Length: 133
Image (cartoon, rainbow, N blue to C red; front, side):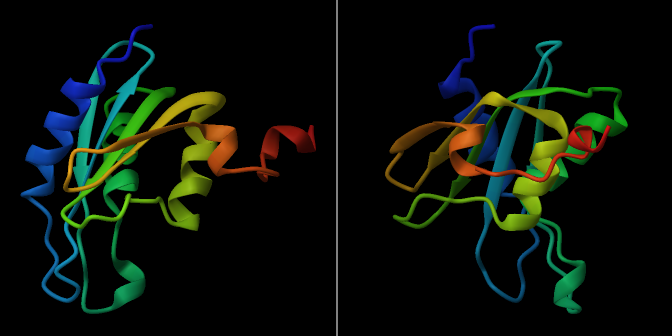
């Protein structure tokens, strides 16, 4: 499947505008493409009880799964700083559930710079329940 990074980037940037971040003011947007070709987006949603905050990556993945998608082929994560947006540990573990090792992960910043990784590069030595069988 050919991934259109520019289309994913544009959708993630647009969705980042929907972020609810009254505590950190750190807006993040994400867009994923699933194996069926559909694109899903997500923004981060904060909560006064910080542990209940949901990151953009998980929002996009949970939306996709709730619509019937089960395999993420690529994800892009954007923010409005000059630093590349990196997924937190919780997001990486959720990504493990729905991405293969060779899934594409694009990190971006406010300068429209991109870094591309395979999922196994950002999540080495992953805990995968499939190994328990």
